[in-house]
Image (cartoon, rainbow, N blue to C red; front, side):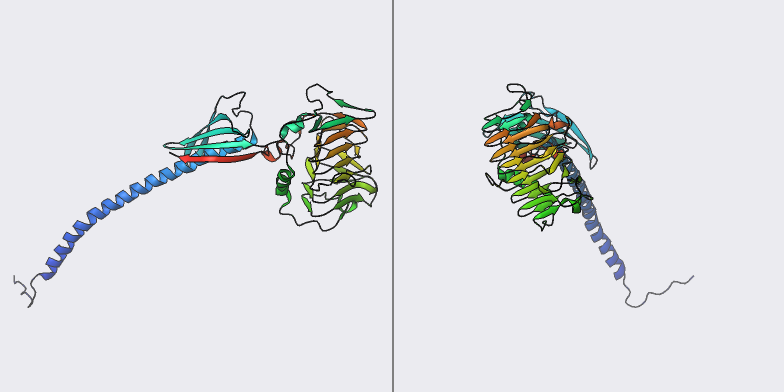
Length: 375
């Protein structure tokens, strides 16, 4: 057997280089793998903390919704027992939530402490619920000044009884700006209605709303008598408004919605005048900032609830038929015809579209988050 002769100049340099590379690789790879392992562990920790934070924040958001909706199980001044519950399976985490009633602030708002915990992450948030005008709806007549009953009229419940008429009401009362902001949300995406006249015959088939009219508006019927105009959303009008004062008879079905007139006109011509060519049916709100003259025919039943309210002026009532709901006015409520009965607004399907009436799943009150801290 013969041995191959070494090629000239071949002294094993490649072997040395390979050994050096292996040595360097050994020195580098081990720490690199360790670093990668640390990075993976750190990433998992951050992922865990992020999931916990999302879950805890979801608990806070759920509690805020409950407070805004004023659910019956919330703690209160009368029943301060904390509300404790679980928001399950948020990013595979559960959040334990506790809502504690902390009393009232200097402006009469209700203060709540929300504590939401997901594993090792805890969020504490102090929130204040203020405003809300639901107590206005609690009486057959609610007036910041006085009320007058004239002619063959009566109110039920009577004076001095629960839900009976209230004069010199000193509870929360909305400003025009608050109501304008509240109802603007319903129509802000609508193209303004261009005409100063809305003819019922053109809209009887489809109904109207949400509708926004920047200016005066006259709702009348030049078509056949007896047409019905159904509201499918809020009707927001900035100027003086006439409904059913001329032409042929028609019916407006409020259908749980609101007519809001931003005009602040006091005296004749009124901010809102509803005449005897119009019949009102269904539940809903009829609100004007200024004076209201309310003289329609009423086709209502004890299952209906209607709020007729002048925010800064007088509500002058002379309807044909029995009224069910609440008559409210700032300077005065005056009734000259018909009988008025209080009914419970909480029975309105879907809630009444009024701050404090529960429409849209919200009480309409304002909530401010004062603190929000993580630990």
